[in-house]
View 1 (cartoon, rainbow, N blue to C red):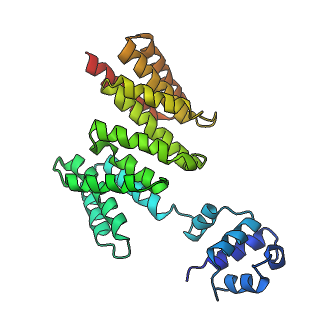
View 2 (view 1 turned 90 degrees about the horizontal axis):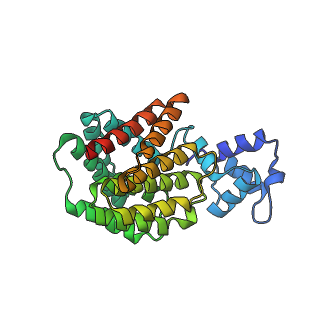
View 3 (view 1 turned 60 degrees about the horizontal axis):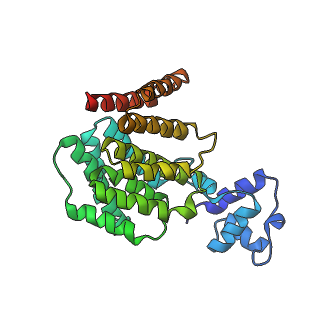
Length: 287
């Protein structure tokens, strides 16, 4: 049994609340006491009620139960991205073996996760380790889920560059339709925004102007908050790419360089470097 009760008690007492303060119809002090002592569990309904009474979001509580570390889903994607960026082929191979041997993982998710790792490994080794059947399995899974949550967004974001243009466009449009209910969750909203900007840039690079304008409109409807500086910068940068590539406006290059300079000024050198690479790639393709 997880130590949920003990952690709940810690946060309840930290807020100066007694068991009587939390108890209500259908949730007694004796039930709460047994839960905190680890003698019994609460139903999910009662557990959520109790968390609401101490004003603690469930994601914050789960973060605490995980020893203040990111959850298993995000930990895997961080590992994959880190190993890929550092070109650690051995590390990715080891991670792939670990995923394949995970007996407690649900088979569907095990197959999804291992295919994504194979895609990244293939990019580094230049040896195709996945099949079209693997890709079709992920696509079928995504089309079979009516409402995409964080896991589906992460799966898709890591699959995108392995798809042809037509399939990636189809799934990106499905993503925008199937995530409406989750857009107010800050993390999901940012993943969605990032993927739409990536799609916008991908369309510009491929001279797919109609598709590019679709994603431009999607992003304009997002209404980025003023605090979402990175997303605003990235979108503005992408719009200048469109101005230059489609309309031949040389002034767009000056605007893109201003964005890069602004990022460097606030010590965002890695992001600035990635923008410089995008700019160099764009100018190189036109030379």
